Length: 249
Image (cartoon, rainbow, N blue to C red):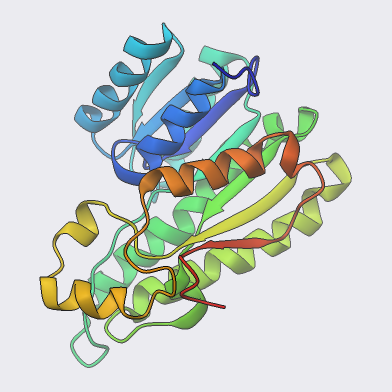
């Protein structure tokens, strides 16, 4: 088992399932202690329990809506109290509320922007002082290929994920002087609960647009996150790594 992240503390939002769950598990594989954050206590506990069964008592669950600034700030204090510090922040929490602009409701726009974009801001604010004190700290924001290329019926999601890229590049410039790298990952179509709900016709259409063919796996994103979080990512900052089978190139 790797010890790449021994003595590191990682915070992973949206870690209750899917990509976030895979990233949290992979960091624990490398020896990290992990703060598992999810909107629901049930998902957070399930993910933390899975990690602890495999790696001992190294994960702790926190239930919070990342779009709530005050609540996220309190969780940040809890994490630092529980673990003593934060070395790695993975902003992965995200939602979709797809609709054509002509039909999109204000609440559909606000929910997606508040969770996907403001949620990343809230998480950074919650733990930034600890990150800036650590040698070689990392922030990794999970964006999307949709933030790079747009998609009909997803203007709210595309805007939120494009915003995450802008946030990433700005933070990379602000935090570089303290040795903190800030990068984004832009997943393509990955097998998760979200993609499982797509019709077979749409799935075939998507496959036709991916040069490598097929959908990615959550482990593909987890591997990219751990590369950027590890020693290999020491001299990389302000970048967007597309993990999409060549969909956007």
